[in-house]
Image (cartoon, rainbow, N blue to C red; front, side):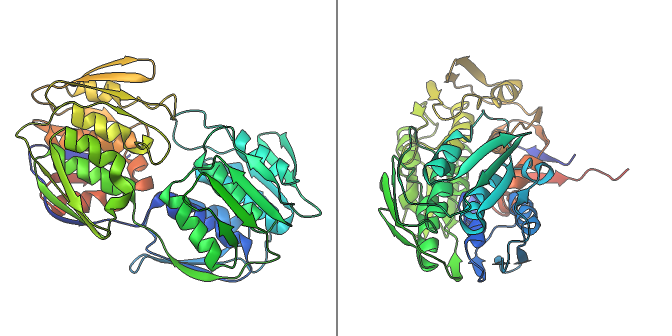
Length: 424
């Protein structure tokens, strides 16, 4: 498998352009199933997850064309030719479950494999299933597949999610746009990516109220039209590079990124001795103090601290003065990067869902293994500040969610190299 070699100790200085958000573009792609007219998405990152979801959508009848140069993706589903999303495609990524709601709403039938993806927790699909059942769907789990039918169409309902779920919010919101009558969703996720999806659905003719709050109302329509939509910036990529800039004691500017979506990261960074300034189109990061200070963070649903930045923050704390506590409340198995960071000299003690990180003077380069998407990039960040050479193995995880990360980091002074596996 491919790997990345990193020589640490280089400050990051300059500008990086932030890509479109992976977590926004995937649900937007599945929204193409709701209409027989073309959906054109701009600022679509060239990622493994995008390619994998295109394969799933093609299986269902989607005709797609992706221009990697101008980041434009054309999706058109004139007719749904197949209602089965098979295991061999869905197992590659959990976001494939998002075809369930749109497929059922438009076609009246769907058979979707239980999904796979990063091994960071069970992430059950019961919230998706329960929500669709409340909209009138008949659902069975058979041989690892979700079999759903709504022969007479979906009907609006009042649905209260027992816990906040991004995926369930997206899936049920899309399904409800073609349901008969009104649907009210309570205790929904409020992530910027959900707002972006809602705006695209409105551009397609949906009637949605309450985006950005914990209560969304959808007035069902008989059909939706095609549209053109530009994907929002990836706040997780931006947050990752903010932490990289802080760790390497550089002066880094992130172009085409909105500081409004990063409040929960900026506050602990400031407490750690980092200055972050910016606006709706650009963010700059630099250290205030000579050495970073330990801080405590706890992951929570948006607008709380993102679970997708937890591993990166832990990397930063490994070289901070004093100690910091990282508490994970979203996924129960998201500390798999800890043993790998420890191989580099980090002092981390895990107690259940919390990890106490005692800062060390320096990390030392080592060979480490990536276990999931965000763990992968946390090891890259550690390598940027480690003494000597770090080799990060199994980087296909990185390619799922970070566009051209080697090129982007190299352009601002990092010394790293992609090592391609030689064909047998």
